[in-house]
Image (cartoon, rainbow, N blue to C red; front, side, top):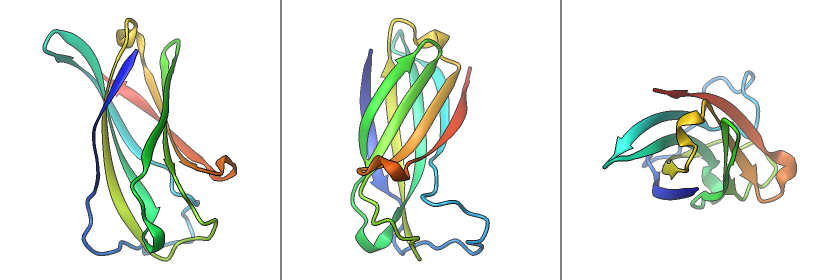
Length: 130
């Protein structure tokens, strides 16, 4: 198994804030999509995610780990969260290509925004498009 980080890019120019903070859990879990495609003859899983990171001390999130378990891939986006509910966010776009011998068997991607201190991690489940 192998993965290639295509990009991790901040996509906003001004800090972003949520209008309704009463219905949001913090940290905000990643918004992810996943699709299998043919990459020059190699079946590849494209994972794209939008991450919301505190703009006060926003740093590039990192791909911490990416592991495959039978038909599930787990990807952890690591960052340093200061444990307080942010007022504003920077929005990051992450794109990863993943390949393995069994990539065609993957049906689900679990993506997590993981604090360097993992007690405050949040995740989402995404079905793989075909």
